[in-house]
Image 1 (cartoon, rainbow, N blue to C red):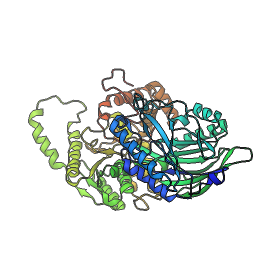
Image 2: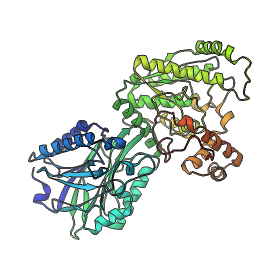
Image 3: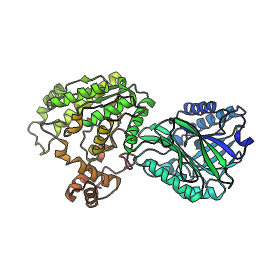
Length: 573
């Protein structure tokens, strides 16, 4: 290859690769690198991949295994050996580097002669869903890397989020900041990333190439959001929720500073990040798609009650996997309304899926007969849910039986509002391999359902037009476990419940402050007594949440990795 920088040291062509690695898939991840090198042979100087791309990210305790680190290093060295004189571009790719006690989180810049320059991550995150201080050692403050006449300031993910690293790199003569990232999606995250970029550009005078991964990894969804920002703080390219490359030419100006010029853009628009509602929906689709596909499930099976949670879960599943890989199942009880049966059938028809019907009345009768001799004469609690829970567990058992026979993963359909206060049945509607709405409050469920009925962005596999009957969205939500039951009889208005929960869970506020903030949010008075009741229910339901399936993270504080409370807890919230 004739390197642009060797003939013209005032310019350097860099391709930023927003791709989807898989944790532990060393061969597959490095094959992605190889394919891009072949694609850009003779067309680029350097390919930049996201954080720990060679291993996938995040690694959790997998990175503590010496054998895994040895295999990664062997794969890295093999790539470096292949690169010697092959005419392809240099590569910046991440992975672990052995340290004295713990490994380092490293970025390896491999030149076309097979040599490597290594940058270590200095600032290790220990908040939200990351605990890198547990598995990585912090490296020293990074210094700029000399590459073909330019000084590259490489700041790995968290190092960019804290200004001291960028300042240190600029002070040592860096001409551009290159930021390999493993930054997961949550609401409003892209705006935060861009704000940090603009603040950094203003403070350092350096342009930024921010390269994030895209794809699902268990509960986390990496939305991409890679961008190129020039010295004026203008975004000249960005994209979310898709694999794509874009090439940027660094050009040294007459003042000695480096400017960015956008070249070919493959799959990326200048401002190609979706708005908040579309981003949220795409995160659910991408998280479910990659969880199912990367773990080798042929598809999913879910309960189709005729309610909004199951209808939205089914729509996300069809958009993620296609109608042929989604099996909804109606499981009516004597309390199931005719309207719910009709709505479930209509939703399945709109989505183009099959629909099974398995009545659970015989199971309910069987359990009633089994338990009657034992329960006879026993005191009945004022709020007895024994046989309501039998219904939910009969449905759960039905779905698990279908999963065993057909190999399909059970998709749980509960939302964050219900998970918060324990309005869900352990081993019943909570059973499943994945819960796509686990971190989605009920009021947002309604918003997403209305949005999807009018929108179908590119890349979704479901049909155009409405995907659920309007009656499902309009009717009062009900578990239909007894006659005349509605959710709001037990929980209050969902607008009030979600406002209180958001201030308690995301904001970590107590009941008095939660009531005040929630009242302001909804424009109606919410009593401290109501907030205290919700706090008690939320604290008491911790044992249920600890046994719930994983689900897509979309909020700042998700149950599981982002919310770690003891079950035995006499303080509450």
